[in-house]
Amino acid sequence: MPRHPAVAYFRLVRLMKGCILRVIFGGLAFVVAVILGLGLVAPLLRGWLLHHTLLAATDGASTIKVIEHSDSHDLPFDPEEKYEEKIFRSLTLSADQISQLRRALSASLDYSLTVATACIFVPHHRVEITRKDDGVTVLEICFQCGEIRLDGGESRIMPKGWKSSLQSFVISLGMSPTPKEANNAQRGLSPSR
Image (cartoon, rainbow, N blue to C red; front, side, top):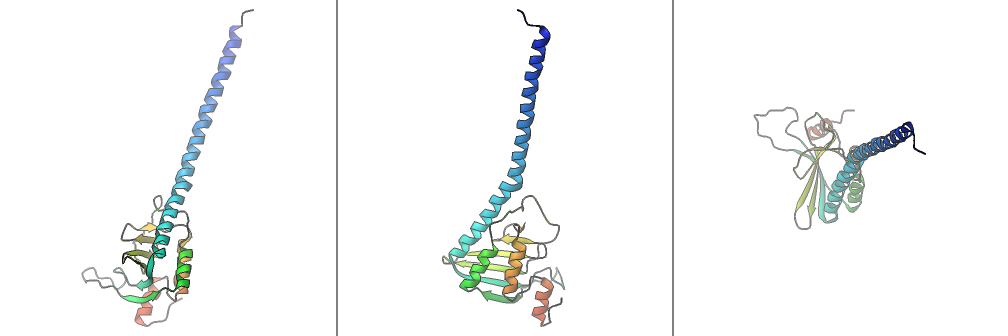
């Protein structure tokens, strides 16, 4: 018995609906995968690489120093004057303090390629890791804007959680995470609260 043309038409429509739904759901799954990749996988990889780089440097270190210092943008700021850095405090870390530093540099999400700050990078703390081969890894830290600079590269936002863990670490060394207190310490003034 011949099929009615309307039945064939409805079957074709049903088949097309199924194909269209598969394409839509496939496209949606692709978009979700891209968002997850950009929002989670890439920052996790960047954070792990930074964490691994710094831990590898501390593994092969002959000495590690934390230095609290001035910056060329500190007041009184005079761009015409030749700037000379002032060291407020410098501490060579003990084995226990190195362990604390390593914990402060935990593997975390690093959104530095997707987020930026509007402030000027004005570091007042530096971690100098001198390796046994006499090479030096330098991590500059600006707690004001929450950025770091590794080995003179571009400044970048700290990975998630680093600002608070590094601030706690610096405070445990008897240093101040705020530049005003660091400058006051150099001048012999008491820290302002």
